[in-house]
Length: 207
Image (tube, rainbow, N blue to C red; front, side, top):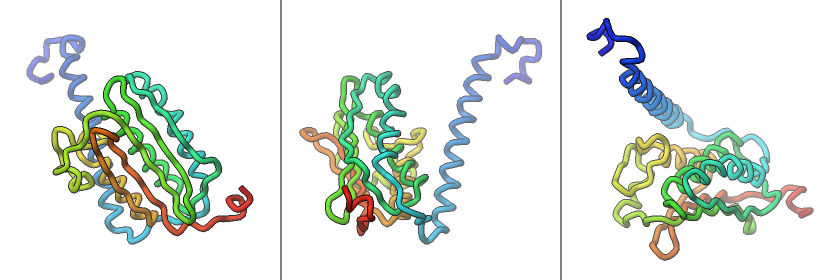
């Protein structure tokens, strides 16, 4: 477009420059996500490193999303049990929490409510996000974690390409965790990640 109008100024062509730049950013994000998934497909297991404080990770993500929720007219609440630790890769777990909270805020609706919960029950740790807003159609639920799956009301966090939840599931599986979703008009939409067989370490035992 710029080459076709060589005599026009940059400011006169700014709308084309801005739209092209915006699309380039979106394409970069999509390619990065596709590369991540391709790399994950070749990884049989995740990086299980050491015990991490998932309570601290969850709290940080809530703080990060406070201004985002405020701008969207959404109330962001949390019920986080203190000093919960799991054996996992901190980067992967942080990304799981980030994707789920981002997704919940996007679909809660103006004036809606998002709640992030974290609790330990015996040797399992439950991480969940619940949000108000329109429920996910029942026919969409079995496909939510499929790559590039799109529907008018399906959850597609992550630049709207239908990759966010697929990445989330992939990361959860790498951490030996299970992710599920349920959605009704009465109770809202809830995504839950369960980290199984988490042994209590000394710090947990003392608490």
